[in-house]
Length: 188
Image 1 (spheres, rainbow, N blue to C red):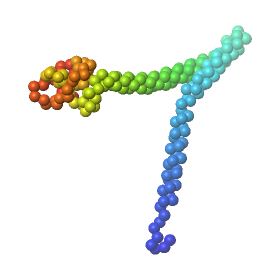
Image 2 (cartoon, rainbow, N blue to C red; image 1 turned 60 degrees about the vertical axis):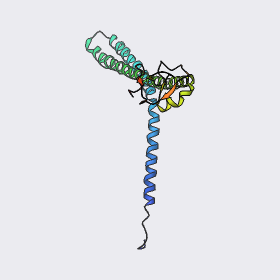
Image 3 (cartoon, rainbow, N blue to C red; image 1 turned 90 degrees about the vertical axis):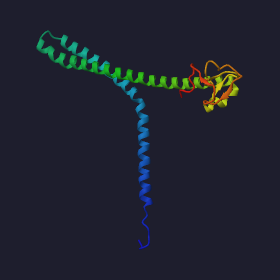
Image 4 (cartoon, one colour; image 1 turned 180 degrees about the vertical axis):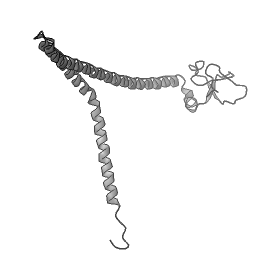
């Protein structure tokens, strides 16, 4: 390198950037794979419970071949206890699968419900604005309205004035005007 040359720092920076990009891509793919964990729980439970029942039956068959207690104990300890432990473990795995499915369904239902409520709110706002087309600007700006000869301030969505077409836009500090008790327009 010459005395006036600037060291090339772009290459190490680009290398670090590529390592970061590949690391983030690995995180995304790992997160995508976690969605199948409930399937693994179902498979594990489907293997553990029948295997445990098989060990219990084999332990019973081995213990029933003899009447001597010292010959029955190994079958009961190995087959019966191991089988019972596998059945209990498989039951917990099945229970975990069931809880995972319930949580996923609850999250999906909550997302769909939130989207449905947002659509309903949008439709209700459109209906409200369609009933009083002259008040669209007042509703969007947060201004207040009153009847032609009225002395009360209302919000445009107040039940008292919502279906009226003859409303006028008024200022909150207009003289001689008092707030409506239903919509309480000055509370905001």
